[in-house]
Amino acid sequence: METGVQEKIWLSSPHMGSTEQLYVKQAFDSNWIAPLGPNVTGFERSIEGYVGNNVHAACLSSGTGAIHLALELLGIGLGDEVLCQSFTFAASANPITYLGAEPVFIDSERETWNISPELLEKAIVDRRNFGKKPKAIIAVHLYGMPYKVDEIKAISRKYDIPVIEDSAEALGSVYDGVRCGSFGDIGILSFNGNKIITTSGGGALLSKDKQIIDRAVYLATQARDNAPHYQHSHIGYNYRMSNVLAGIGRGQMEVLEERVSARRNNFLFYKENLSSISGLSFLEDPKGSLSNRWLTCVLTSSFETRERIRIALDNENIESRPLWKPMHLQPIFKEATNYTNGVSEDLFERGLCLPSGSNLEQEDLERICTIIKANFDD
Ligand SMILES: *Cc1c(COP(=O)(O)O)cnc(C)c1O
Image (cartoon, protein in one colour):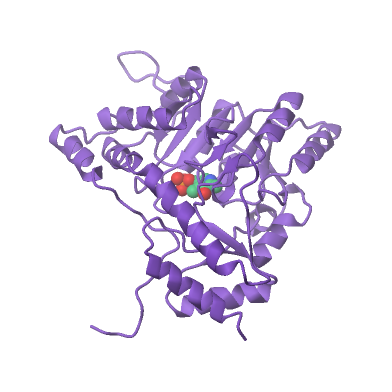
């Protein structure tokens, strides 16, 4: 039926390959419906092989749960301070509060839009002057763009503060020849529905230290002591990934490289077709880095222009979205300490995420670019 309304174009929708259902069927056929089982182990080996760099993986029920466990594993507790990138999705910061700890938000630098090494060091020195030694750093490869790994690592070593590497958006991104996920003392991934690959919901905790992984699995499965009865010497969680969903993950791993290149191609298409517009700009890959371009983001010249484009797209049934609203501007974190420089606030005002799914067709991309261009002709 011709309705006159064009088909919806989503920001980032799930994109299945061809073997996901086979793995799920295996789970059904063998009655491995309960959590754990061969798909979970298979998915973990596959992630380890892909990320490389001697990393170990534990699959969990969400990326948020993985950050929660990461903080717990680093001994974060009541009243502790955790330094967290302000420019991110709330799930990076929320788990800090689950443990009664306090986030201290750090603004971004312009080159990658991620945590500013300069401000981070300033904050650490400042907190120490207040007699508060921060207990962890949460750095995020936002939109798939690797943060300044070497600089952050150097600060982490200098002040002896571990790093949680939030790689939820960055599976397949590369920094200095190594894939993201293994740079932090603990790394995390997300397989939520809109991420680069999905298990409908899920996450993983990564570390080069096998003991951390074993401990994560123990905590994620209700922290059972080694005894025939149920005995607990530690508070546990129910955070393990289901064997059914891990089947989807195994299938998705087989197409991950295709998904990364499709998203990178979206970015290149937008850049080629839109960069002649003065007042629109794109974030380039810094030397040595390769973003998976989970989402393609553009910067406009003003809040008004950003909104004009967003609304024009929305009127044509196309989903786009302002960049993440920084945590230090969120009502829920208005009491939190922050170290800011205006960068994330500016990005939030002027930035827009364009449709970026790996399942977008060439004609979708053309339609989007035509609408954006039309809004600059007047
Ligand atoms: C999606 C996301 C998370 C949380 O992952 P879930 O699997 O949705 O819980 C954490 N951090 C960032 C930056 C994310 O984009």
